[in-house]
Image 1 (cartoon, rainbow, N blue to C red):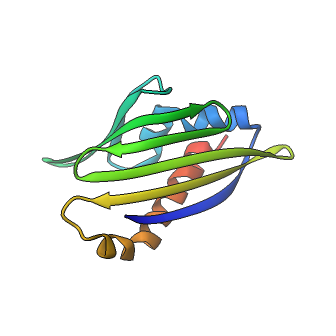
Image 2: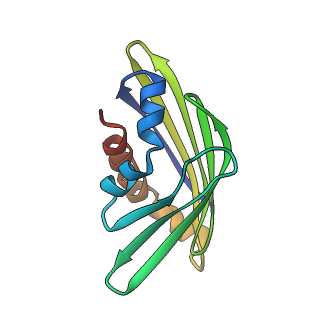
Amino acid sequence: MAEFWFDVLVPGSPEQVWARLWDLDRHTAAIPLTTTLGGPLGAGADFVARTRLGPLRVDDEMHVREWEPHHRAVVDKVGRPLGGRITATLRPAGPDTRLRWEQRYAVTGVPDALAALAAPVVRAAYLRAVKQITRP
């Protein structure tokens, strides 16, 4: 699988950042052409990020594997065409929170080596979205 990670300093306590990070309405607002369906989130919850462009639709089906509020969540991408895993970890950093986002991903029908070539672009898109989602 292809992979990437980033750290970002987010204003607010881990509790505040956690609430913003896992608010599915914020995901819908931050990610173009995408509606996030499901919730509330917690261990064992399933949700979908549905991206639509005209008649084309891609469902990114996800399952919450681990849920440690205000600290760590692990989300598996379990559908087709997108698979993988996201691990989000929050740590206090003074008045702010350090968020580490680690992601492994695969696209059905795309060799891992080719998917890995897109990692810098995928990372940049996720970093932008996470910053927007967690913004106070």
